[in-house]
Image (tube, rainbow over all chains, first blue to last red; front, top):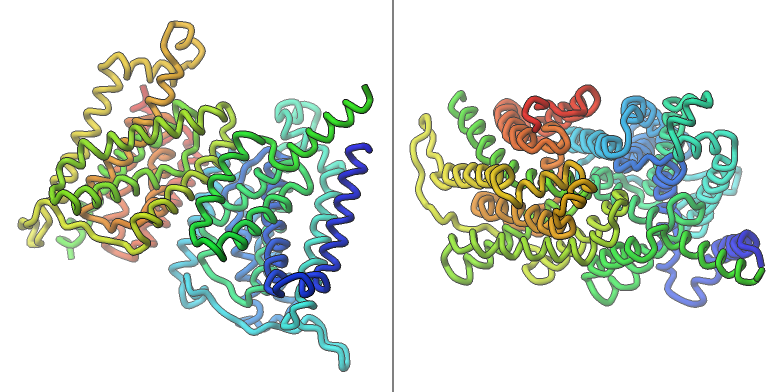
Length: 325
Length: 286
């Protein structure tokens, strides 16, 4: 079988499993795994936002937690203070992170490589500390809590995320849409131009591409992705906390994206799923699971520097070449 | 009020010298190995923890100054040999590897040393009158030790054969190898030295901060700020920036919240990155 066919089949299979999960999981195990699955879906959007910048434009952002935090607080404040309702707050959170990405990105994308990675952390730290000082609004590390809002009310029919299955399908729908948009973006002319910038910035500029504007566009799209994951996470946990804006959150996202396979569509999902599953499985037996997570991170960068999906594709490619001979 | 600000400013200077020591370690690892070391704060934390252990086991503080940097050097050399050497020329992978390393170090310390923050009794008790405020003698000693260590580091780098080799490898790896410098050994020596300097900062700081497995997380951004504001690869600039930043933060925190002082430093750092990416102290670069 061809590489593409195998990967496509696997993607459909994965999607079918995700769709059927609310019925499979209660049969084979604890319903607690449903919320783990939701968490994997949400954080894989976050990893995807890092992957979009790093894997397709070559910019390593270490400050995506900032836009995650804006999405998160946009939802929390939209619901509690502004009374915007479910969709209003969601939109508010995502636009806030997009706007923030536009403002910070306008400065950050002027810089390259090391400097870019560092200024993104610095920006996220600045807002982390600001959020800590305005405790009356953000609630500081303790955060702010809110009740589960209604998604939709049509006569007798009320959809609310208080129902776990509805919540799961809402998250699955948003995440699927996001990955679909991601795929379309990457294969669009914009995506091709971004990859041209990644491969050789000077050449891209010489063939008439506006490198600055392309990078800024990618930065804003990536910020919106991170904002969506933050908004989803706020709705999922019914709370927002400054601690999710710290650089460690960005760091974890970078690790998931690179270990899963930067520059691949499935990489961030696989990386995130692997790490969250390891955390959940091991932490119930042994509290020092961070040791194993750290060790895996190191082993993967040594033995599979292209990430898990990158390694998988290489194996498939070798196999199919072997078949031809 | 004015004496409070003076004390905060002097506190800033003391911490600045300690940070300078740690940041110099970060800077040589970055400049020579092209590794963005996210575990550097944890190297500092390992220094404070080892000092605490030595002090509580033996009852004396000063042997830590020989033992701890030695352990740090060996650990650093080991990390370079086992991990970093296998992912050379891939700085983004070094970020992931050192992030993993940071998780492992913190978890090992939490397992063995415990999660509760501890305090170390100052090895030099007593205070003296500083502008009407009782000031710890140990803090002044800490500043002097750090200043001496920084001086020794620059003497080593500029006056010894090994130091010259390190500068040569940083300047041009290929030419250095062609001239017969054992580049591979310089790599692990550098990582070991960087680790040792962070632990040295840890020993000096142990009696004036809390000994906690998370201590590295707070100190890492500060070290990066010093390295950036001083100019990447500019070692005297890094030291100067660490002292200047910490001094300014000390003074500003005399007027407002320390968090606002930290925001000020971060904004300064963004301005430097955007408008003077070669750092504030270009004249100091060699």
